[in-house]
Length: 155
Image (tube, rainbow, N blue to C red):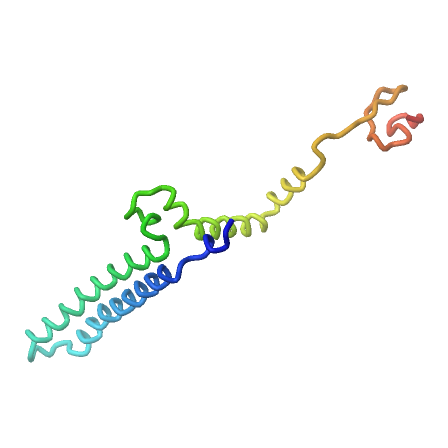
C-alpha cells in the first residue's frame, strides 16, 4: 500500500487543529460566564449590560464548541468518513488510518491476555501430526520414537 494513503493530509490536520482550537476557545468563553457570575454575585448594578455580555459569551461559547467539534470530526475522519459525502470507497480511505490504529490497539491488548497467547501457541503448532502404531500392542507413538512408549518393543 502506498505510504501517502496511510497518512492524514496536511489540510485535514489543519481542519482538525482549527476545530480543536475553536472548541477550546468556546469552552473558555462558556466557563468565563460562571466566573463573572460568581465574582458579581449579589451585585445588581449594571445588571442588564452584564446579562447581555454573559449571555453572548455563554451561547457564543456553546456555538464555538459545536462548530469546533464538527470541524475536528471532519478533520480526523474526512468528509466521507463523517458521512457528509456518501461515498463508501472514499470513506474507507478516509478512516483507514484510524481503523488500522484501532486494529493495532486491539492486537496490543490481546497480546497481554494469557488465554489468547495459549490459543496462538496451539494454533501455531503443526497442521498435522503423524503417529506410528506399535505392531505388538497397537498403541500410538510419535513418528520419531524408536521404541513403543507402552510396551517398549522396537518400532
